[in-house]
Length: 418
Image 1: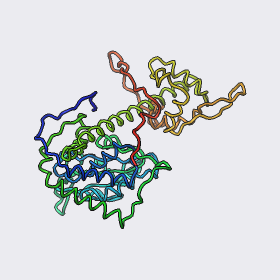
Image 2: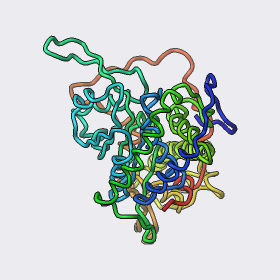
Image 3: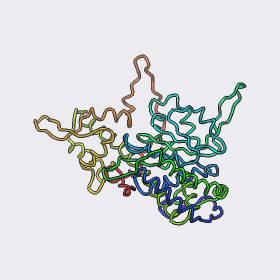
Image 4: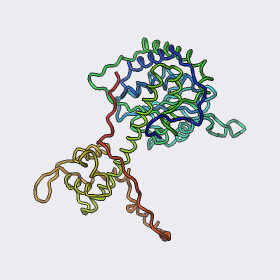
């Protein structure tokens, strides 16, 4: 949860920490090194990745192990390169694509590795199947004292396996809500032609990054007990505070500009994810409303864009009349539908004239996936059933509250870091 303003606090305040100028300079060096090899979507994202790497070196002292979700819409956005850099800088990295849950259960202990999971979309996608245990481990391992119980050994005794470990997951598209809600989310994009990075080559990149990693460990390992007792003031609350607290702890240990920079990144990135969630809900609402428009028009094969817009903005209970600055327009509509693979095209209508229009068959897949109509669910022959009688009393009230309204595509992100 993101407060309206000000600084949130925990249930108590722990002892203060003494800032370390050498630690601040070391974080500056790490930040510069990360920025040489990857183009992150914002300065805040670069700050977050830097602090996440540093936090991995004190994870035995942490109450929560934040996930780092490195996601992008397509291949070639630099997700795997981020993992390459993390592999050479985090505490005890364990890179995996197809490892078994049994292996990970056995390597996580009191001083757990930092899990680096590439192609994470294969774990959570429709073909995940046998990887359900790994998904459960990644969910549970965000917080201490959430062991996984398994029957183990020749005597088949119930055994508790620890799950607590920091994890970075890279994949195409958003990960499940249970992961994203526990993660610092880095939304990667393809580099622009003018955005330059240093080529990652083992012969010179690895020694450079290992030198930074070793100095990080030398600085932070003696501070683990201090970090364990320290409760920083947080600008966010609830699970967002749980996830960002380790990063803010490191920033406070370093001092200098890092405490303010960490909290600014926390606020900006957490709020951005709130907007992303709101936009997703808004797009689902749009799909439902367009399905209603088609139904009102007798499920014609296509409807003119102007007719779809007119029907949407006339609904007094929908947000479309107030969307943007002057209400939903054709440009907004196309942007909101683009992620579903839906776009307008030229259609010829009864009067022989062509017009930009939306074909109904373009929506069928999105309707089935994101807003299935219960009325369309028909039992197979021979499996008919008699519905239960309606409950007595008043019908449920209509949902209340305003829907998010904003520019198409969400908020504009900060300028990218080189």
